[in-house]
Length: 237
View 1 (cartoon, rainbow, N blue to C red):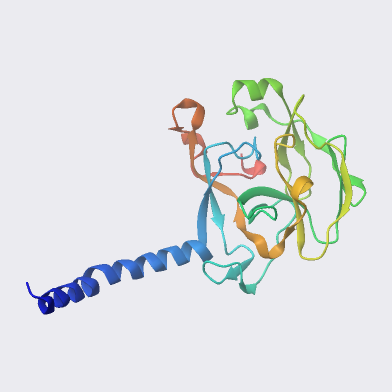
View 2 (cartoon, rainbow, N blue to C red; view 1 turned 135 degrees about the vertical axis):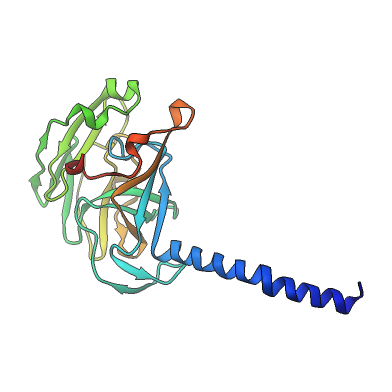
């Protein structure tokens, strides 16, 4: 095969095989970047709501539309609400994280001996149904303290771990415009706004409200079928 024939063959291969695949890949990755995605959860910072090994669905259109592969906003139609579980880029190192929105712009957030205060008012707590944490490891169930934090609209499960060093008294901190104070539901095992400060609105990727798939790390990564396609809303369980 001479050079001319080789170039003709390469050109046909590019047009018929490679270029369509690249276009399809670009479309798919652009959709994941701007419309919807999933996020694997490698840590227990959101337990008992989100378990290690959960893959959560991320709605990237929940608040805005972004230019693919960037955090530039084309349009905004909503803002994160208190109690939403959001995916965002950490202000400390850019790591993609999953936490719950606790403080909104203009709020004052404070912790007093692990009790949350919003704008000077204490948040109420009530007992948590045992079924809400039955899938945790035995050691975590034995040593954890569980409750329902009664945020308006979004009551949700929280847990504490006795004996674990953590920030249990914090603030008060005033939240500036376009910033959000986020915390993990596992209050004594979460690297969150107590440590790296509020998150800018522009760094919030989207909202998650359901588990797509869950794999049990402590049991040979077998699927937790009961969590597949399940809601993260405590009222839906």
